Image: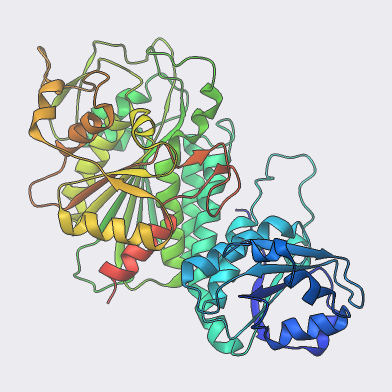
Length: 493
């Protein structure tokens, strides 16, 4: 896993400002209200900082924007970065400031003069989240000491309090980085087998992990899931991860992820342009893995089970054909009209298995499921579908609190008509109109009566071509922080 940069809290040391190397970050609300560290830097630079703060350019800065003084006279630092931040900034504004500083950081160490800023830890988290690069496949990877060389130090008035606040935040950053790594990995590296092996490593954190192989899945009757992987040399698997941090008899929250390590579309072949991006079609499983890592790393006081269906959708003489009928674990038969609508076939069996085995208190699935959700919501928000208002609202609240966009979409029996099949219990697609809704409606057929359920279609947010709020372009890690917060707010106690 890509290791996050070292992030620590230390007591404010104004004397050290003259000799600190790397970059020094200052927090300024306005040019009239300057804390001791800003005044100290101004003296060291013989008034140059005050002139910058009095400039028209600084006056136009919005909260979270930055200005830089390069190679300041009288200091050893390479740069002084000034970020405009309200004195009573909220957590989101503080994290945004950290992200802005990370964009300037490079590989240099950063010392943030955060003083008594109440959300200093969130500034550090923003810095750490944005300071990510996937280098695993490069022939000349980053130096082994990059974490230390590029360390982030928060100089604050109460370092012990900030250090305590950083503990769960570091765990979340690690989980996000794991998710980003998994989504970024090419399909010849992240096969179903190597993916399962990476999840087995969660045992080191106290997670119980088991891998169900194809023979196990056949015995369970998972014909829907198995049909997706028939054309691949990589064996289909289901990985079950249990974190038992809550009361022994408490029903767990179940997280279910789609893990299609590569999706050609099968015989309903995708266009060549952009097919290389289908390494990210395991994004839902990647998020589940990151959440499980985070919960274990911070010792969450809740019972959570993560289940991921790992398959590869390829073409061969054994591949499922359009028009084939497969039987799900539930017992329902499915006419496969489009082999590129494979994610729902995977989730159908894993959702049913999760309920049959664990009787969860609630169930959330995540999948890069439809292009239709991108048409509806773009790359700003994930689509949220639910049969339970309370769980849905909790998910939306957690996502909003973590700055991860999400929007509720409708469900309704009228959409079921699209799934009628003349030869089976249902079809796996229902036409172009309402595609994301119909996909969710399909999944709802595999949710048992009384199980609170939320479906997150993350096709538009899992991996993107531009920078996001907390990440450089590429894999975003969307959902790890929101679901971690959901567990903390709703399932711990």
